[in-house]
Length: 114
Ligand code: 5GP
Ligand code: ZN
Figure 1 (cartoon, rainbow, N blue to C red):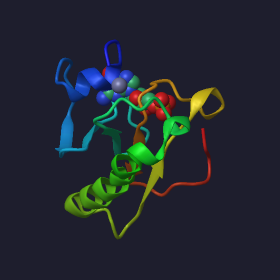
Figure 2: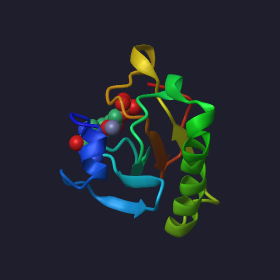
Figure 3: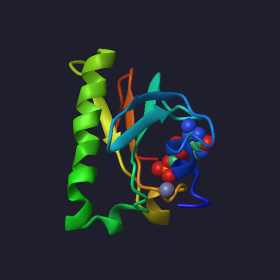
């Protein structure tokens, strides 16, 4: 989608530190990391947010978890643990309206959803 930051990253029109990609998902480092490891996993399709999840895109959105598990194992933090976060709309603080999973790891986390 034109004028979507994450579509531009997926299409390699703007740079990002991509750590994993396959036919359904692209994962890259968050520009403003909240932890030693902070990745963003995005579906290749432009799905604005969780409210746009449907039967038609459930395989692609479910694949975000498959990719998260693969990355966690590859990067060696699967056993230690990590957090997967998806923000939806203003109350959750979503600022980029291409659905993305934050994959956060590398430190002990408290319950502080901010
Ligand atoms: P949200 O608040 O929408 O769930 O998260 C958006 C995330 O995108 C933020 O953590 C922010 O740091 C990250 N971000 C915003 N602009 C860019 C960018 O241009 N490149 C990368 N790699 N991350 C970005
Ligand atoms: Zn997009």
